[in-house]
Length: 399
Image (cartoon, rainbow, N blue to C red; front, side, top):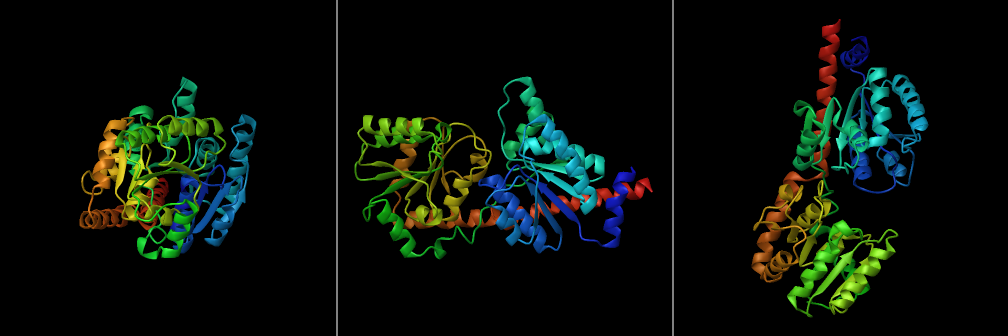
């Protein structure tokens, strides 16, 4: 296997390993945030860190992290462009001595896999979602994400999905939960001024119990389920905040507004739009809700809420089952069940100060132990090291 001896030789000579992450674009989102975090961790560890994407505002974060960005049209699903990307990536791998190519999305993964294996680099993926199956061709399109020399699943739920649907090799799968920035989501670092500003902007009265559902306005995030649950509480002395942008889904936003009016909740439920200061927003919440009607691949909001010491109520499916300890850090309720959600809300809002403090301590400790950015990056670098060691062994055997 002569193509692998190149990596083995580089390992022997002590050259800095070169990792190239490939992502469609660097605009916003969990995939992009994970790419930036790992790029920074690689640079901090003294490795050469490359990121290939079609560009976007987060490129400057890649550069600030000490990594290098290379712009290519890897976001394209056009077969001709994808074929051209194979040649572009192959040349890049050879020119830069790339050891590991890490693809984080399907379209670039097809080009990256072929380029990596043709140029003698190891190929790995991170599966960030279960993906819709649809027609057989869609299943084939998705399958590339389960065909790496290593496959990172962002939850055990996703790992099971890869095994069951795409028959991934279980020996190659590594479960690495997404990590949140604990320095950012730290209640001790959120000033009173930040909280007061948001409270004023959202016209919240002091002492009014507040329920919050953070998430973009899209049907599967379960905003309608929460509205129906709030109606069942039959309380006008609370506030429910739906925090998130409609991202152009004006029809769904009108549907939510109509449902709020139909249930007579205009004074209780408010659509407050996007928020740039989520740590401060979470400090205002007495209960945080993740009511997703489809299983979450991870559920960043669930971890962020716990990191801020807030009781979390989540739908009992997908990765939520890995993130919440029932009756210790939150509640799990059947998905799409307003009655069960209303019952959990009653319990959360009835917590006294001492109980709330105990919940906060448990939630913060769990988030800081299991779901930090540092933990995620360290585990990812361990996977890279596995591949380098494997390449060295294969190279020595071939020699």
